[in-house]
Image (cartoon, protein in one colour):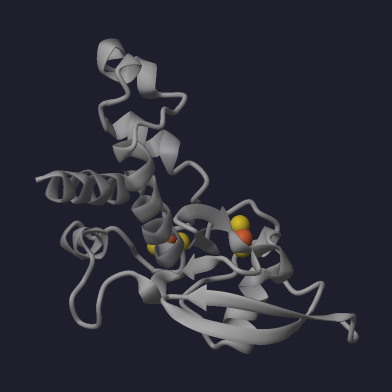
Length: 181
Ligand code: FES
Ligand code: FES
């Protein structure tokens, strides 16, 4: 790709301010990986289909391969490097370790970033297509049960080519339990 028009943007990434000039066609994923060396976020399909590139922007999960860097100007981005504190793992990270929620690990940063944001969505009462399969009253009251089906539905955008799904669901269920206590 040749050089295109440049635009100055400011982003807070994992708590650190970045002021950077970017080609307006640069995706957030490429900015993170190629310019800022934050390679924890993975490129799988580069077409919004696999979830490997999931990050949070102002706390909401997005696939960073479909977001232009200029479109998140002024916002706060959290990547897998910003989840947990040094050697102290976030409960979702710990649960993936405890439950063997990965094989090759390529999808794992996206799975963890997605699960991390999903647990916030669930805690604030967001519903999913599976929410009324469980306790309907709880769903109507904005406290849908986090059943295995509910976890699968909410993480359906994150593909694992190794097929570690059952352990991923166990890990997310355990993380949900530990964060709600
Ligand atoms: S790399 Fe972004 S969804 Fe696959
Ligand atoms: S652990 Fe290999 S793709 Fe998910």
